[in-house]
Length: 171
Image (tube, rainbow, N blue to C red; front, side):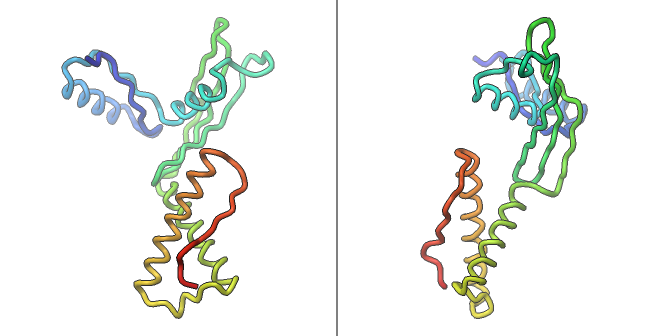
């Protein structure tokens, strides 16, 4: 039986959206007694801190430091400035500022990278878009977006330089 729930929400969620989400969850499950809503940039920071050895507080014994978190979703990008400080000998994280771009996200970057792939192939003489049918062009655009998504995932899981091959595509 679940008694407590932790949900991540966009940093731009206001009081009304948070209240509606909390009420919906409590109505859906009678066993849940407490709902915690965590801003997505803060959740991203906590996941990073956990992956890198835990949340120890500011580096070098500093009283506080500031951290910029970029949280890129499929359709939006959130930036948050968090203050990390020692309070009573324990690490404490608090948001100082949040900014959202509601029409720029990971999907947009995928399309930009896909366009770069197409341009690079055309400049290398490997592809002449003007000679392709509309359906071939649509296929290539979709294929390049898929390749761009793969690049993003591979870089996100293990940052390094990647060699990218585009196999099975018409020249």
